[in-house]
Length: 150
Image 1 (cartoon, rainbow, N blue to C red):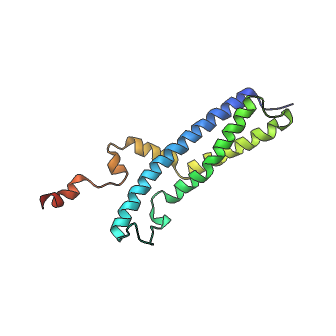
Image 2: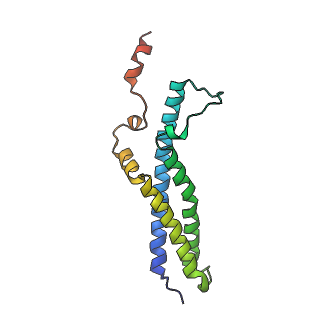
């Protein structure tokens, strides 16, 4: 008989959805920051589209962090599917505990990664930023005043 209750499955599904939303939001924000930084660095270093040179990952503010979250995100999709299958009774009773444990481990992995990369802090900083352009590292319009005066 299974030790996993319907409430356990529902709680895990809720957690999985929250983790997935956090991961997706972090990736969206990190990609915006990273793209702005990459464009700025390419411009500063004279790297054009035809160049074989690239910007090293270490020079991108959230480069490694975004990759880590992207690598762990498919695990949460698998966990959600497993938990939905458990909730619908599609998993044989003999495998319920094992499948629930596997799904929980996938959620724990993503949760740990999100904590390691400071995802909540990045999201909060993005939300509290009054000017998204400043948050993503774009320059103020004043920088271009000299060009407009020509």
